[in-house]
Amino acid sequence: MMNFSPDRLYELLPAVYRIRDAEQGYALRDLLRVIAEQVDVVEGDIAQLYDNWFIETCQDWVVPYIGDLIDYQSVPSAGQLGNATRRFVANTIRYRRRKGTLALLELLAYEVAGWQARVVEFYKFLNNTQNINHLGSLSQTTVDLRQVDALDKLDSPFDELAHAVDIRRIASQYSPGSYNIPSIGVFVCRLKAYSVTRTPAYCLEEVSPNCYTFSVTANDIPLYTHPEPEEDSAQTARELNLPIPIQRRVLQSRMSDYYNPIPEKFNKSLEIWVGNGSQVLPVPIEKIIVADLSDWSYQPPKDHIAVDPELGRIIFPRRQLPKNGVWVSYHYGFSADIGGGEYDRPLLNPDEIGKYHEYALYKVSQNSTENYQTITEAILQWQREKPRHAVIEIIDSGVYVEQIDIQLESNQTLQLRAANRMRPVIRILDWRTSYGDALNVTVKPGSSFTLDGLLITGRGVHVEGVQGIAPLPAPVGSVIQKPPQLVIRHCTLVPGWSLHCDCEPRRSTEPSLELCNTDAHTVIEHSIVGSIEVNQDEVQTDPLPIHIYDTIVANKH
Image (cartoon, rainbow, N blue to C red; front, top):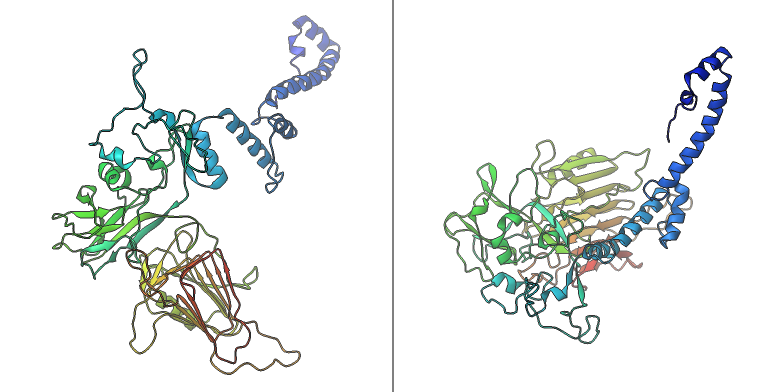
């Protein structure tokens, strides 16, 4: 809005007229003020006409007209949400202005499918004869076999070698060809890079006490690049901008781009810490050697460690074993937000907790003295207080080696969960010789137990109901108790209890989840589990309700 002085027309008059108007009671000034109001309206409308040419400054009623001019098609699920429509039209105009650019194709691939991508113009990598009048060939005609890095990138999105012309169509469904003048390829990264922060590395004692894996489940896992945002939106993606596996030669030649331990923040692709007494110190970058550890035969020199990013393995010198522990941070590739992981997930409150209900919260952290140090300590406090609704929340990504036994009373709820963007690991060992070790949970009618955001390895989860005969029919007019409820969401129950280096289960016949003599309503969502075993007495006649949503189930039995 433009603010004008109401006397701006009156001030343009010669002084002699203003003096005479003052002598007669300012009648002329009042008349010009009325005229100035209409002049302001006309000038404001003219200024707004110019602003209405642009989607950023136009009035709300102009947005649909601009959308019609560019043939904007609204998304039915989005609806007309006021400012949302202005944003959609503005993005459409931005895309139209950048039509044909490679960066726009990468942006559209991410906006439509959620996959990061790299676009390649294949004509730039064709063999061609040097033009004398236009020096500076785009590609060489022969391959230098000494360029090992370039050979490793052959037929990848970052291929830099020259190719012969391929006359086959790139869109052919029988035998597509890439390298031609009109061909453009869009390489999409279907897998996303998920972080694992400050977690203990796994020592493969069966191989050697100086051999470690990044994965706490002892399996080989390729390390992925932590994608960095592009400096220029008009620039195509580079290796550091995409979630792709880290190759050995790339890590060796550009170590500082992938490894730079900063105590305050994990902002690189991988980091390694070694315990030194009561302190945890990062391994300096000059102490790391990149090597092929596929057969565990390489032995690093003194005061150095060997790292294999393609297998996720670490080797220390035989005479310099890390006696106080090894911690790692890294990124792995996966297709979706499933299983235990450090991704954003909604946290659910226990059942029946609303505006007028409260629940007890017990926080667990190995690195904080203000919270419980172990899950067992929190469970013991929960058993002493006996709240009706409770949550035991783990606020770090540590490994908890404990024996867990939970017994719920009737109409009691308990959540054992990880904090948002955390991935704690519960490793259950063979503690007792004469008893089966597992994460044991006993449920009663009306109770509810939830596992959320955890990775459980070593043993499975054993859920058992109240032992006894079948319940008698409830009397007329009495309150019927609901069956117990078991919820497993965003968890990983390692198939076979643990994994080999090739990711095969060590005990493929052992169940990850065992339901024994219970009619619990079981819901499994966004999780990775092994086989599920159901053991029921003969008195149980009704089928056990189990609902599985967006879950990977391995070794079904």
